[in-house]
Amino acid sequence: MGYTDITVFEKSEYVGGLSSSEIPQFRLPFSVVSFEAELMKDLGVKVECNKALSKNGGLTIEQLKNDGFKAVFLGIGMPNPNTIPMFKGLTQKEGFYTSKNFLPVVAAASKAGMCACKSQLPTVYGNVIVLGAGDTAFDCATSALRCGARRVFVVFRKGFTNIRTVPEEVCKCNQSSRDASHKFI
Image (cartoon, rainbow, N blue to C red; front, top):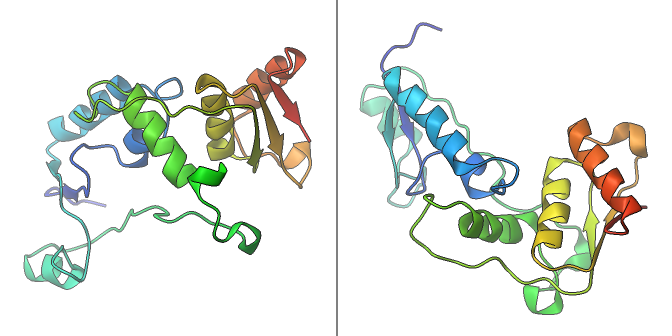
């Protein structure tokens, strides 16, 4: 589009957004995200970390316009989980996780170099049910196995032809289902 003076404002202390903070190491190593971010910087893109879009003391679109930015692209993702009413009030103590509170812990613990948090992988026991059939659901399923789940059941309602994850993930899980690690319902 012809823009040459580009700045990325990142709310976290590290670059990469969801690629860094929620996609587990086994799927997307931090070194790959870091390499891509460095390529972007080599092209002249500036990155400012710890800068969140917010009405209360953070960046605002109006402030960015006043600072001379000619265009603003918002790539904020989905910050909150999509939870159905049936699960309202359930917590991690009851064994209820959303991708937004499970995958960031997995990513932080598995991606050396991403942060200095030195966290450990969460421990998951027994059988796990993952609702959904997209990339995030399969990341949760395979992460649950790596965190100690005995078996993982991936449950979805739209049929195998409507699975939204990359085919390689379905093949991996189908192979694992023969080993009684995953089951499709």
